[in-house]
Image (tube, rainbow over all chains, first blue to last red; front, top):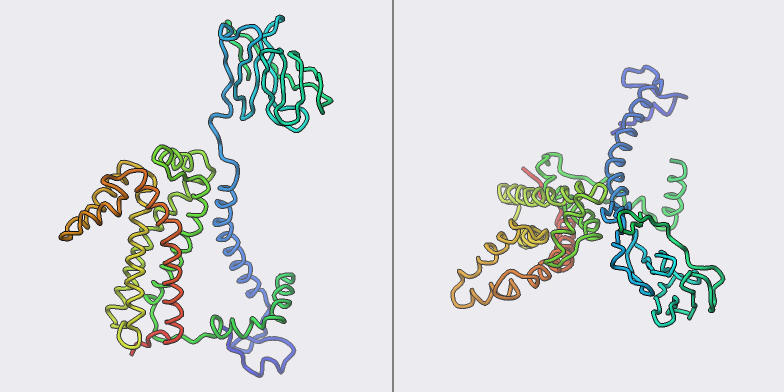
Length: 158
Length: 219
């Protein structure tokens, strides 16, 4: 609350109640105090809200995919979820191979065609060989291969 | 600050907001004898706003299904950053809101402020108390814990004391004979849409009326 008196405006500078000129240091001190208190208050409200909107921790994400080799048979495919994306494990004559199911054209999930031993994309008809190489369709690059390890007869994608 | 003042000036020039703000906020006269107890109504409204905003955040993850509800609340509390805080604020502010509404009403009753011309302020206020308690009751079931399940069971049992129609009311509220997924869905819709909408309407009315009659001047 400011109680303004007309004579304050008659002089070139402000005076306090006892007639002493006001330096402005106290006012600045108060402004800094009120300003920081406001900033802290706003911060404590805004920070949790912004933090809440971040992507949450999903405990399932870090889990490796483990497939016992005896569950894979030649010419057959095994579908699994790895870090939220579909992967396809195929047992070829040279051993197992793991591919990212995302078609390199527009990202639809390809499916394994057992009869022809190749991958087929349901969206635009792209065809990839059992080794992931382009056979036909609107694609130019092969399926992405995913590295894996074999530990005690278990295929591990980590 | 300069930028804010520029933007405010631009708006003020077009919509004349300053006289509006002065009349209703900055230069609005309130009775000199009004004590701090006159804040309870406003504070109750503030807790309502806190509930609306924390509720919106919780709704991003909450799943109103008997098989998913408890897991989704646990997910909020353990996996979402600051989720525990938002969930706790929502639960604590609910209790605080009821306390503030009751304190607000106690003051109105003690000073007999409900008398003419403010009878309808009291009537709408009693309706708001009822809505607030239903909000608390329906919200209590949503985490789908043992406590909330049995709380809802006991609470919905109350209308059975009414002669003849009592049992029908119990079944209507439960959406069946027992507390089930249907009850959860019904309570959820009441809690997040129906009651907030009805309460907003009643609050609007409550506030408009108090502006028309002015607040009661103590002797």
